[in-house]
Image (cartoon, rainbow, N blue to C red; front, side, top):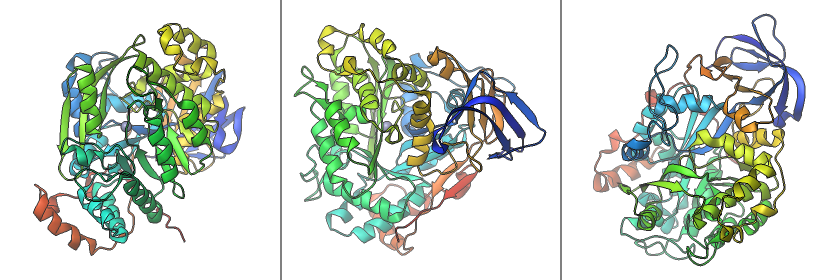
Length: 549
Ligand SMILES: [Zn+2]
């Protein structure tokens, strides 16, 4: 929530790429939670020798809901890994590791200078639980995307070509879930997984349906999201995630999306060549080349770091395969009529060829996509690594030497399957501000986030400038959220409440008369218990939809 403090951040090097400010020494002034042109009185923060960024915005993360709790339960051995949070006057307790609990998630994000997060996958059936956890995730503002690409009611409508009704059903579901955007995960594949199958061919009918194809689902949903005027385009997890040779599906998907906006999630997991696990290689060059030419698209990296984590995705069939490959624990959740979910704990190892290719591919995409405004820093938390390891990726992007050092640890065979050793691009601080804040804020359609111009939310991160960028970005000196100093000298000084960001797209109210009987017939819960009540959203901010004229 907006604070009431008056404050001046004095003499820092400001990186505000949305406003063309590139390392100029200037003051940032704050009043009533917003950036203002000037202030008199109030607190002054001495930021000499510091770098000032707009607060970070995570466009794709998994931090709340049933799947997270399932994962937390599956990896008790991991909970104390980074920092068991001890309750203090200003913070509450919790567990850490790859899937921190709600309070710790908020503290850890703020502790990196992040102030807004997008929970990328919410089934409507468990949206209430997700919102309860988001409400208990302090400091950061929160949006979420509702899973729609395997919703049986919607797929039936797309199959019949009833796209107008499909639009009303989608809009109704967005509001029922109190969501901000629409997520598509393995379109058709998770529905097919209910029968132990997958949807691998973009232009082949989804198993269990007579004619609808993944391509039709993608086109219909991307078109619907645009027609509804949602601030954030369709958020798409492409078919064939993780599979060797899947880059062809990704290139085809980009073509299918022509004429619509879309955000391609965790592109790293969709940029592999080769015919099987033994020959898997990076195809980041081809994927980046195609992506560079398609200005209707944005993406996030889904980068991988070596070490322990846990993978969580609605992509049930993929998770089953991962379990078969690794022999690790496997969890599966079926969400009736809507989606599914799989959980597999995982360790990315430097000497493992597949893992080495994955690690390199994420960095390659970040280095080969030439417009930082269209590619954002993520690890698909916790899938590629926990979000609190972002500073390690920033270091690898800013230093070709740091990359070379890490490349030495890989098996020589792996080096033949990647192009990372040939890439000498190094990110500038301004570009880091774009991929961690300004770009994702723009992609999410949040004009008051990701910049430090007058009127912006006063979400600000102040870092000690240092050659050791990993340390610099891991321990901001100050973080402001809504104008309040929440982190100071690496500690939580004040825990404020964040806002819940959502949209209310227009729909014909009569669509309830269509959905209700389907509920009575197919769902185990009754229709009236389904929509999430507005009271559950903490400090709701309903963002405008802009329908095309
Ligand atoms: Zn994800």
